[in-house]
Image (cartoon, rainbow, N blue to C red):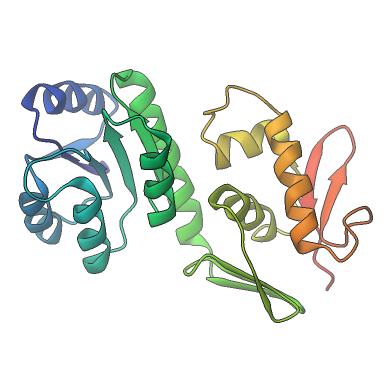
Length: 229
């Protein structure tokens, strides 16, 4: 059964371009011209992902996102002409799954949507929402990390990286696989990004970052999360 993508935008031209690109990739497309219509259709049609514009008359994209998340747990990708960093920061802090600015490549947008759906699908097949490793607890629903009973603040990407590793303990991930699964190839193969985030994670997770207990380097290959059990 094809995945159902809801496209929410007040520009008919944009909807037409996106619809064409997504149908070529085998998706079913649901169209909404604004926030109110999107909420009504979402409750009825239960889309697998929502592609959401920010700048719309009446209810804007951020308000639509909040109200949508209140009624269902659905991944959301923002598609907006607003490229200011503050808008992206606000979006990711609210919990959007990806942010694509206009003008955009329809092919790239379809690939980003596939990557988000793949990541969400992997999360859905996992049996636990909370991973507990003694003094280390990771909650995927609230996106919270606790170390020794103390809450530790993580950036969205730091959490995604930690969850990827910890949810598959002892599995080795290459840097390329991590880029694809956590960043959806947005960094075009910049493996230094992975190294920097691993270092920051160790500083927050490990008692001795220079001698990590959990986040191990597999030399010449990548990284793995080693369960102490």
